[in-house]
Amino acid sequence: MARKNLSALKRVRQSEKRRLRNQAWKSRIKTFTKKVEAAIQANNPDEAQQMLKEAIRVICKASSKGVIHKNTASRKISRLTRKVNEAFKSEAA
Image (cartoon, rainbow, N blue to C red; front, side, top):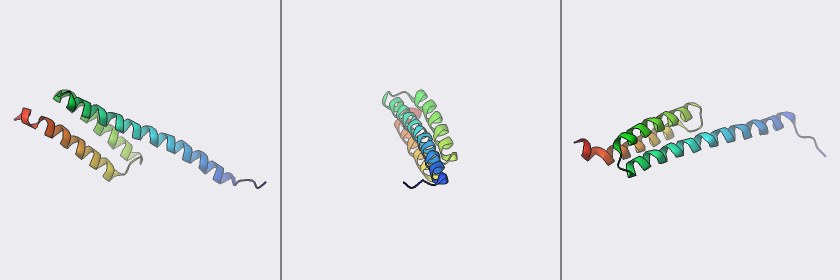
């Protein structure tokens, strides 16, 4: 029976650790995105703005850690912000 390379085994352990960490961050992004959308559905502009701020913070952090690409982060932030603005633009005017 052939013995596996030690560096390959270490790489497997590292990859698994990173995969779980990335999975947690992506889940967090989705959770905050859903919270923003729920606040929009509930027609609550103050809560929507607060949740948007939190979501942007989480997305930026994930991007800086390399979990998602910076352009992906920008796109997600842009879409969320646009949703909030469009939902409550008539009330602001």
